[in-house]
Image (cartoon, rainbow, N blue to C red; front, side, top):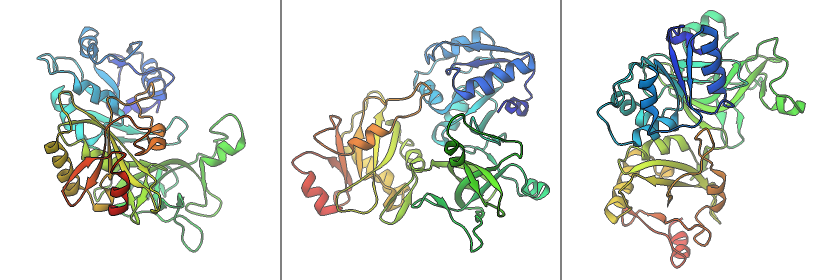
Length: 380
């Protein structure tokens, strides 16, 4: 990560703007270390402010902004201003920019180039999208893999989300995916790597995948599922554990979220699986935060239903909807999902409005204590 800025031709003349906490690796390893290494200038803000963001960018003549995905969404939520695109920025560098807002962010704020990267603090390799390819986190070039003989960089192998283990052949080795497939992202472990974490040895062993290409080898396991398209672009799909099964099929929470946020009345969404008594797997549930000025009226509920039916397979369509005023997030703006999963669709515990899919009426209808038993028995 400390070499990430080389891809954007970073120099001592650049000014970087970082607003995320410095204990976050993207802020320190990518932002601070790269700036010091090149003798450039860095502008730090104690706390992110969407309303003052572009004022700072103009004031300090920032040339490179560093983002995380949710930061971009917050900036887009600020009312449009004539000075939105007036700045000196030549590049945005970061991770987590979702495809549903990529073009809008780039166009509205006139960002010439977006460099989306993917890595981990303790990881042993870095992916980067230098081509402005919407939604991609990098490219898995078959030519480079052929040249280095698979001895460095990334590998993507087939994965079983039920057992949460890679799928192996008769010899016990992992099976590489093909274009058009999803799989587990691994990276070659450098021979001089001793440890990833301080503490119990088990923590380090958990991050290692053994016998991947040949017996005895070791790879760093990112714990992430990615998709490879036919042009060899790589797209993030899910963290292991976020993917769930419903009606015998695997559901990607990221895919569902990307589809739902295409609707202009949805500001943000958090998708997860919930258990239903008497049913195998977990049903999809989406907590949604509406854009200001919107309410889930009958017409909007019907539009939501039509949208998910038109863009998602039947097993991936959220069975339940929860409308929240705002999401609880970490200081790095990541959604906290555990409480939502634990509360599920319990109408006694959840104070937010709840809705359930109704395929007969082609809409989502209110879920209440008086109808929950009948609905679940009849439809699920």
